[in-house]
Length: 240
Image 1 (tube, rainbow, N blue to C red):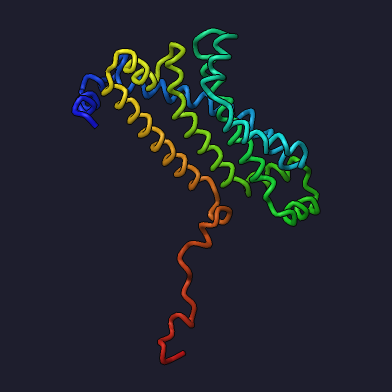
Image 2: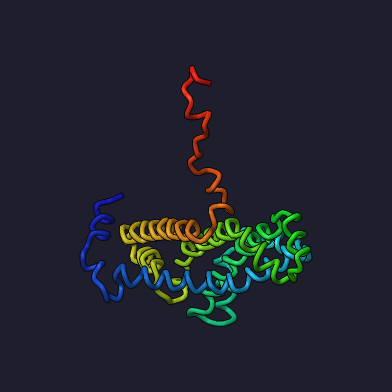
């Protein structure tokens, strides 16, 4: 990393609150684009994934969604939406939502579908309705897998949200596109570093949130905890 990149990253003017092109403002914009896309994608994909996993119908949709999400070029989708709706927040959000839906949909389906059938049958046997089984049994048991899909979607979106700058918006992508246009490569490298740091930070935060929300008995932490000593463990070798 060049001295110019260090100078740009450590320049106090770039960290000044309220600066139009400062790091705090660009990071907040980047987080806004990321959060908006992930929330919309979750609202669409989560109930659909629960429905498919619970009923076992249209499983091809959940399975093929993951493959389509990996193959679909986000920049190509962005250009298509720009051609239809013009520049601004709409095309960037649509492109990012399309990117985020597959991992959330496939992980939700996989998590609900992997719940032990005996548990579902027992719930049905005590008189629970299909909605109650999905909401109170299948989704809680599937939370670790669902959270993993949400983390995956968030990382993909936060690293791709730089495309917002391509359609006249802000975010950390401004450093990449403006730097390339001006041939200011320290600015480009600094922007890439900030995106990487932001992605890792979000991943750690979501992992901590997942650990707090998911029961230790569901994600296996209870089994990995310290084992309670037995009487045999306490005996001396010559006493056994």
